[in-house]
Amino acid sequence: MTLRARFGLWVGLMMLLTLAAFGGFVYFSVSHWLFANLDDSLRSGASQLIATADIDGGQFQVSDDPVTLDPALTEDLRSHGLSIQIFGTTGKQLQAIGHDVRLPLEPASLDEALAGRSSFATRADPQGGGSIRTLTQPMTIDSRVVAVVQMAQSMRAVESLRERLLLSLLLGAPIIVAAGVIGGYYLAGRALRPIDQMAATARRISAHDLTERLGLPPTRDEVGRLAGTFDDMLGRLDDAFQRERRFSHDAAHELRTPLAAMQSIISVIAERRRSPAEYEAALADLADETDKLRTLTEDLLRLARAEASGPLWETVDLGELVPDVVDSLRPLTDADRVALTCTAEGEVKVIGDTDALIRLLVNLVDNAIKYTASGTIEVTARGLPEVVEIEVRDTGEGIAAEHLPHVFERFYRAEESRTTSGTGLGLAICREIAHTHAGEVDVRSEPGAGSVFIVRLARDPRPD
Image (cartoon, rainbow, N blue to C red; front, side, top):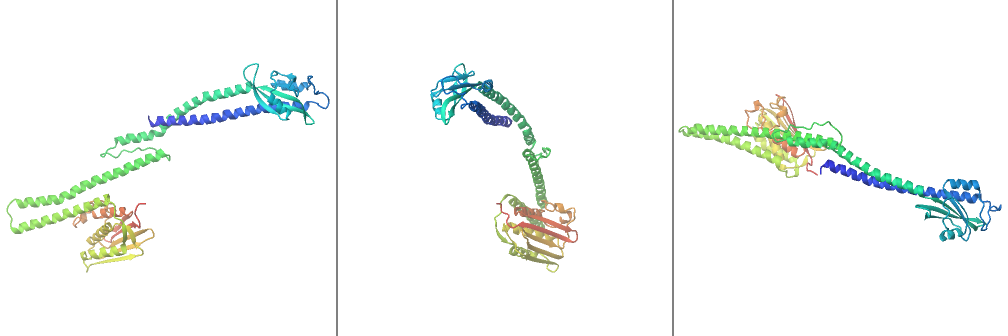
């Protein structure tokens, strides 16, 4: 069963339950109101009848003879469907006016009247179907019961109204429920249409083409947010696939270069017998190419580990780590022409992976040394309220503006830097390590004025 059908059935079921509860409430409330109205009518008629009886004036005779009542009042009561019976204290009928006057006085009602209390009763109509509602009320003189008045009215009108109300509820409920099911099915179709589009788009997507987008109008409802999230996810996947394709292509290109050089050297040497000096030179060239290939392979492995494996979290004091790394790289500088300094400011402890942070520092400082023939290189660890900042500032060659957006891309090397050793993965590894530590790395540079690399690390990057 489709989601649209289930939604329509659920709407119908909820409407059925709601209508049943509401219909029951209406039916019983109206029934109670009708009975209360009927009882009030009987009570009001009996009170008027007793009030107009001039007991002290002699019109009402406490005897077995018929009692003379106010004709105008009795006619008015009769016109409203009320019947009047007057009984003596023995239960004998003294007078009867109206249609429903064949009901004998029940012993229980007589006992209640003689005790000075009124009582209601519902009795079967002896003249036909239906029921009759009666009120039995005592007539007293000086707190002494001298007669009993019984007001009666047929319940046919009340029962007919109740039946029509019940019939209306029973006939109307299925129509309303059916309309709810159809409406729910239609509305579910409209609401789920973007999801159908998502499914169709997902079926068209493959690893070779991630350019498909839903392109739905932006809305603030749940489906609109889902569509927007789906498009964002496709964009991120497309970017990731593009990066991986470029990475694979660049890695193959970079690996092919030293392998081609090695094959060329071996082919040339194998053409004819060579002198020992030529063999030594060829071996030296092969060693250089092998070293390049090893360095490139190690960088690729480091980058893959940084992306795939989780860090080994521990407390790292950058106030100790940064000077140690700088001192280990100091022999690479020309002490007469380059001044390499290191300072720490404030609390610079972080939770991090020591080996990864060492690799990040080594790459940044080594990069500064390569491109600073003379001048200064300043490494500063600075504690800020929420992050720790590492700044590597040099006065070297600098980076042209057109290259700045790409320096952290894998295998990217500006043309002027091709003459130096390197694989083009160092800064990409730095960025990946910074991201692993919930941080970022940024660069500012001007040609001829040097570069500033700034790394910001969260003090505790561990996930909650």
